Image (cartoon, rainbow, N blue to C red; front, side):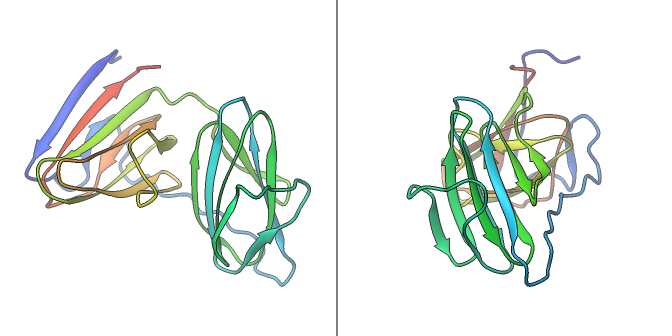
Length: 202
């Protein structure tokens, strides 16, 4: 079992479906669907520790405040379909929405419920870290993991986590990082990037 291991995969792009750790070939992204009827669904984001649980949700219909827990003014509606917010210290935010959940981006420990059913548990241990760094010019990347993944300190709003699939970009000389569990696989890219893995770092 690897312990405190750092691995580099670099230079003129990453080969198609490159396996960097374990066996995660063919892992599919998760889909979260609510009822498509006129009756609104309720999504609740519940923090599970003192740490901040951040979320971003985009739906196919509309989303608004409502449900068993009251969200506050710090939760921002980016448009009629998209909300960004945060909760901590065991607190929760609820929203009513129509249609389906098209995007769900989570950072920090917490759980997501739709109509009372648990659909995402973001509380488990994420022992691995991956860093993607450009080698001089802007670069796009995409990878997937067999477990869970969340943004680190350097990934920003333009980088997306959709289930277990991550898509992002790094500017010239920039870097993004993520914590994850399980195995990791990169899709093809023609852009020059350096990928560094830190395994079993707690």
